[in-house]
Every structure is written in structure tokens, then in C-alpha cells.
Length: 325
Image (cartoon, rainbow, N blue to C red):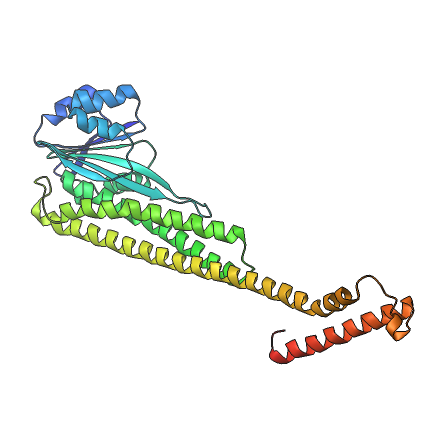
């Protein structure tokens, strides 16, 4: 799906133009153009990226190839930016990432994404309601899209926070189990994945905040620095979650070890309490006829069990007194 918007001094003057009209508009220096490409066909991709804008083949290749790493490349007439949006359905065990590719020129903006993005939808809604505030230049429009995109990191962070709190509660209210351990490890992997996305994006946005690119006007540089601060806060929260999960993992392993130690303790006590009967029966063997005491077999059995029981009971009282039971 190809959506296009044409602005003149920030006012929306055209929408959803055909290819030929787009080519004409691009040659009008007084107009600003935004083309959004959502899950385009191969023919649409070729017509926009190659025929209309004539982007560098390497930029087109990077746009069409999914990448896990954000980046920004500066060409003579435009910037090429790769950024990632995240989304998390409530209760889902994993969050989704969607790549957003941005071509930002002096008088135009092209956005390319394979899945619907809430940040793009929200920006379009804002443009339709108040275009002069957002669409006077591509750098302003790009900032608005990125600002919306980073705002939608918040629900993912909230979902991770809720999941970690639930895991910690289960850890102390139920016995340690492989299910809890698996949930902790899975959540930790999600936090690590989020950090792997956000950390490189901080470096990318930091370049905008330092005013390295000629396509970003000087008075908008502080706004991009604000985006960097937002990513720094996201990174800080994610790193805090990772530390919390590391602590939870250590606690869980310690609880498991305590459980194992308790089982070993019980087994050791049982083995100790059975020691007297083992010693007595080993001494007398299987012969319950005790001629030295003139005892027949039935009385010999009672004699052996009596001695064993007395020794076991004495040993039990001694262990109890020592506080080992």
C-alpha cells in the first residue's frame, strides 16, 4: 500500500498521488512530500525507490533486507535511516519488532515498513488534524514519527515490569520449579533483546543530536537530543530489569539448593536413625537363636528389636537435643 501526502507551507494540498504526479511534484521546490510504503509489492517498491527517487542500489538493498541493527547512512541528497519499532500484546511471552526504513531528503520523506506501525498511523492522524505544526519540513516530520515510535516502547517496558513482578511473587510463594526457572530465563532473553535494539539506536539518534547531518536544521537538533534522552531512560529501565532478573535467578537457584539440602538432611537423618538396627542385625546375622542367653528364636527376635529400638530412640533424642531435627 502506497500513501502519499503533499504539503505547501505546512498545509496539506494533495494526497495519494499516482507515480507520474509524484515525479512532477518532486520538481516543484515549494512543495514537501511524504510517501509511506506499507507492505508494498515488488512493482511498487521498484517504481518508488528506483523510478521516482532513484536511490543508491546499496540503500535500496539495505531497505529491502531485514536487519537487526539500526543505522544511519548519509548520501549526497538524502539520509537513509534504519530504526526498529517494538510492540507487545498483553500477556504475550515475547514482543515483536518491526523495521522502519526512512529516506529523508531536503524536500521529501519516504518511509518503508512491511507491517502496520502505530507510530506511522498516529503521525498520519496528527498530520490530518494539524498539518502546519508537523509537516513544514522532513526533519520535523521525521522527529514526530520517531517520537511516536519511542513512546510505544513504554507498554513493552510496562509488560516486562509486570512479568518480572509476577515471577518474583511466584518465586517466594511456590516451590522452586523448572517452569519458574524457564520463565525467568525467557524474560531475561527478552530484556537482552530489547537492549540489543535500543543501545545501537541511541548511537544513531546521538548523531542527530550532535547536529552531524545537514538535512536536520539547527533549531531541531535539541528535539533530537530529547529523543536521545528518551532512549537513555528506556535503556536504564531495561538494564534495571536485567539486574533484577539476575538477582531473581540467583535467588531461585539458592532456593533450589536449599530444597536439595533439606532433602539431603532428611535422608541423612533417616540413615542415621537406621544405623542401630543395621549394627545389631549385622552382629547377630540371620541366626535369631541365642544359646548364650538360652533364648529361643521368638524371644531372640524380640531381644534384637528391643535393643535396636532403644538405640534408635536414644539416637533420636540426641539429634533432637542438638537441634538437627
